[in-house]
Image: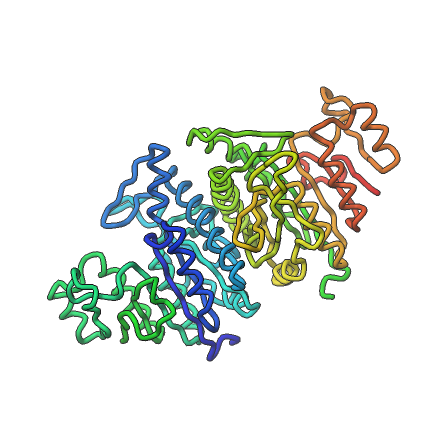
Length: 264
Length: 264
C-alpha cells in the first residue's frame, strides 16, 4: 500500500470559527503552516441556519442534529459545499496550501447511507458505514501533494445528497486512512481550550483522557451532553487505529502542548 | 507530456437544462455514456436569480452579464459550486461516471483576474488570462480516470472568489488542454438544435460554420447578439488548437450528426 508509514493530520473545525471571517482567516493561517500531509473537515451550521432564517425555512434540531428536509438539504449543500468550502479553499490557496475542496460525492469518496426514519425522521441525513470511505482514492489526492478540504455533504451512490455530521465525517476519514496503514492524528478544534474540568474556568483544561478516566468524567458530569459525541467519536477513532485525538481551541492549532489529548 | 494524443471532449451546459430536474437527469445520462476522457462545465444563472429573488437581492444584468456584488458572489458560489455542482456530481456518480466537482479555486486549477471597474463595474467578476488554467494538474485528475465537473466560480490566487462566464471557462479549459497537446472537441449545449438560419424554424440548423461564412452570417443577422459570444469563443478555441467546436441541443449530446459544427 502506498500509505504505509505516511503521517496524516486530520483537522475538524466547526461553526464558531467559520462564522467570523477574521477568526477563520487566522485559523487557516495556522492550518496552512502545519507540516506534512493534512486533511481539513469543516462544518458550518450557523451560516446554514442564518440562510434558512432569511428564506423563512424553519430550522428544526433534535438532539443537536439538524432535521434535513428537501429544502434544508439544498440550503446545507449551498452553504457547506459552496460558500464555506470554496471560501476556505481559495484562502488556503492564497496561503500557499494546495487545497482542493470536496464533498463526499466527489470522486465517490464518501458513500453514506440515509438514516432510517425511525425513531426520528431526520430526512436527508446520512451515516457513514465502516466501508464508506474510498481511502485509496483519497490517498491518491494526498500523494499528488494536495490538501483535501471536506464539507459534510455526502451522497448515497444513487444520486441523493445527504447531510452528515462533520465530527463523524472527520472520524470516519481518520479511521479509514489509519486502517489503510497511515499514522493519523485527529484534531477537533472548537471554541474552548480543551475539555474543561470546570466549564466556567478556561484554565481547567483536562490534559489527558484515557479509557480509565473517561467513564468517571462522564459520571461526574464533566463530560457533558454536547461533548459526548465528540468523545465517543474520539474513542471510536482510537479503537480503529488512529494514534492520537486532540480536542483544542482553533487559536491553538499550531501549539502542540495545548488542548485535551485522548488516548486509548 | 502525458497528454499528447489524448482525446478529450469538453462539454458546456447551461441554465435551461439545469433548471429542470428531469431534463438535467436525461442530459447527464447522455453525458455519462460519452466514451473517452471528458470534462463538464456548467452554468446555472437561472437558479442564482431565483435565490437572489427569494433573498430580495436585486439581480442586475449588463450586456447579458451578471453584476456580482459582495452579496451576489456569495449567492452564485452557493448555487453554482454548492447545489448545482454537487447535484450533478452525485448524479453522475450514480450513473457509473467517476465525476469530481471543482471550482476554479480547487487545486488552484483556474486563476482568474478581477475585471477592472471601467467601463462597467461588474464587481466580483473574473476573466481568465491565457496562462490561467493549470492544465498539468487538471490532466492528472483525468489520468486518474476522473471526470472533472467545473462550475464557473474561480479565484484570484489571493483568496477572492470570482464569478466567471461558464462559456469562457469551457473555452479556456478546452484551449489549455489543446495547447498541451490533447485532441480536444468542445461542445456547447443549449436549448436550440444548433445555430438556426431562421430562429422560428427549428429545422433550419446551419450544419457548418467556418471563418469564411461566419462574417456573412453576422452581417445577415443570422448570428444574433446572444450567439456572438458563443461563436467568438468557438473561434478563439479553434485558433488556439481545439479541433472542433459543436453547438447543439442538450437532447442531442449523444448524436454526432446533430448541431452546428464550427471549424477554423
